Image (cartoon, rainbow, N blue to C red; front, side):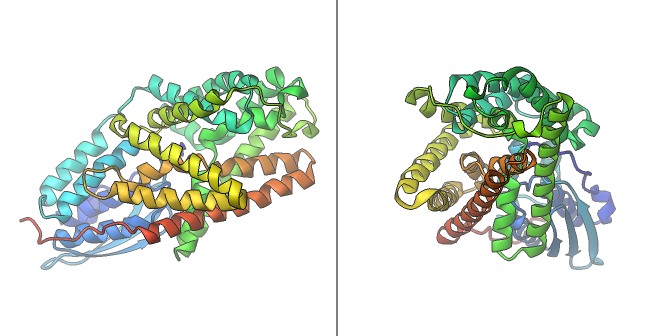
Length: 426
């Protein structure tokens, strides 16, 4: 999911003349900027890297800010404040950071080499050109569309609306001011086009269901579940701030949809979410998750060498959720699927050459579709359908909690291997 670019972390020189403190400040900034799925590992990794480089590090962490105190023997302690807005737009950087952290902790890289490698990671261009990111966002939305309404009309509508949303997302990479209001602008544009061109016949389903797949790229379902997981893990401040930010993004999307209603002169009563009758064959529903995974890889800059693993985890998550839902209901099925996903992703991430756990969890997590429930609830309430709106919001609370507790349980049953710091490299 795209987030507005945050302030860059303070450069190494701001941390003082000590190269260790400078490297740790930059490492923390990059970790913080790529922590859209939770900030819990940052303190552990930065502390381990600092110890490997001969420094004792304490980290005070909130969602978008970290305060480091770095004590290197023979030097005055340095305190650095690092600020960055978390996002998940460049997962290739997370993949590149993992072996760097492992090499530093294993004593194979000192401050100078680690800083040079970090320079290369930050300077590296995105693995895919802008037009492939655009294609990726469209495929990401198309793969998700049958979950909203399994109809050919939904797929055709999503192709058009997702192309519009993708153009705005790609444009925001070059226009930082647009990035700050991107959810609002995208939802307004999608709402106007949907109501004006596609929502005339109730037999095709409600306008909200037609809009949602194209806006799913901007829906903060990952933030909602990450916030709940952080609260469950005892990171109260970080989780609470992330939860407030996620709700703010949801409200932006809802306001954008309402602006589209007002611009077109439509009554808010039109914001119903009744689904159309299914007319998609089963093979399309099954294949949609492959399309979804391809889109995720391209849209979030995931290295293509991880595609097969991610595809297997997506189908595993969908299969477990479907089977468990039959036995214990939707909320229970979501909980079981989240726990299995977290446990398997942790196992597969062990080792410096393996994909990072966040990268493995993200596509499977998206299949659990948390944020769309929140947007459906808000827009349905705004349309005057009070009972249905509160029903969606209640389901959101239950599903968010189920996912968060499931992820925490899976990580507890199969814990990550902690990096052990070796003597520093001179």
